[in-house]
Image (cartoon, rainbow, N blue to C red):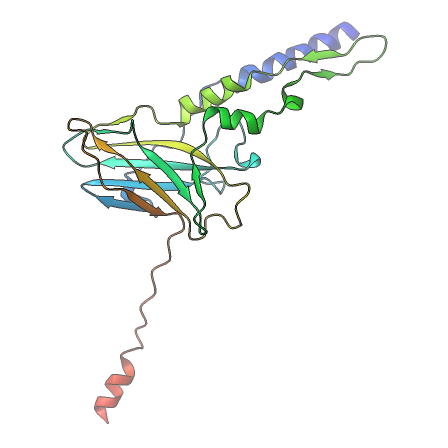
Length: 228
């Protein structure tokens, strides 16, 4: 009986990581101009979609938001006749108080998400005298790299008349809530690939101000005054 229990637990320990390795896909990106948060010029539109709610958060293997990283999907639609290069692109989160946050690197994510306590082996307790069963956690860098492969930009080139997108992560743990109020995403140093000409920067409000509703009654007093 104990042998069956041990075998079952070992199968479970192996099966869970295997399931987590399956490729994942984000929702297909729409043209950038169809997102509420976007900026356009030079026949290029850049949009940002914060992953702060369930409908927009990426289905990544790791919960970056739980550790203080705000996922933001960046969508670039190139309606020009030239390819774009993102090799030198700088995409910064700027808070309402002008805190400038760079996109997190793989090393930044690893340091925050996986402390020594988390990556150390854990054990399944067993009734004496059977020793506990060690479970070796997956290497964090593999999970982060897999998320980057599935959810990041597939290429640093955006072909003419095409749309590309990818998720970036910003460390907002120490910023005042709500972090999106009056915050912007600044995109600089996007260039035309053939000429290396830099395109003017894009500044995207991450929480657009709703358009004021027109009041049909505002002209009524003037009309009444003319009648008098």
